[in-house]
Length: 221
Image (cartoon, rainbow, N blue to C red; front, side, top):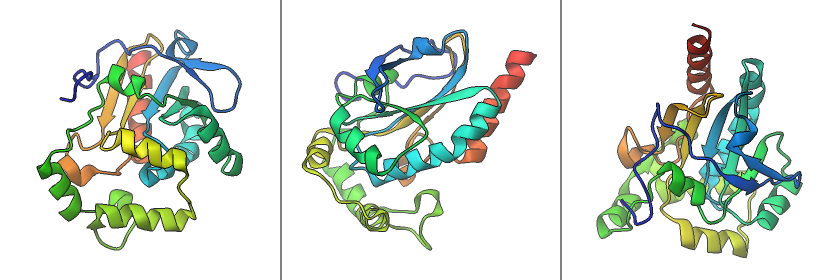
């Protein structure tokens, strides 16, 4: 485990609180905003250099309305400076509530792993083929997958993106469903179930909604 990181937060634990600036400039976002009022689907991303994260943010936006319909709010945390996030979302508006955490403090608090960049990991990244969320007709190398998605998005990396990537790689991502009492009820860590073959994967809408409905059913029971 990388220095400064705890074991991944898991169901049954009290979710760590945080206080972070919001991308829309409305103030701050904290877990206590939702306490005793709403369950929250929390997604921790790395910087906007990551094409898998950019795609997952768009995916979350499409799922947000369905989650709200069953009483679950959505919050995404992006690991980039506020100004960089505001520039990105100025041209790619999102209906999501988003906050920024360029120092990855929330990732550390929730124990989302950052594997050490060993020679074995570098070799795996160079040779492993992935097809996250069935984006391609067949699996392709990780770098090729990232490059293809970047071209499809028409995205040009900024100097800030490059600096974020240099500091953050190979930080993984995580998602947590937290009940109104602040207890984690469901968690998903990138690569947690299938190793590096899970790079770039984000839970499907069906998976997220199933976890949210199970939470709602348990609260009613």
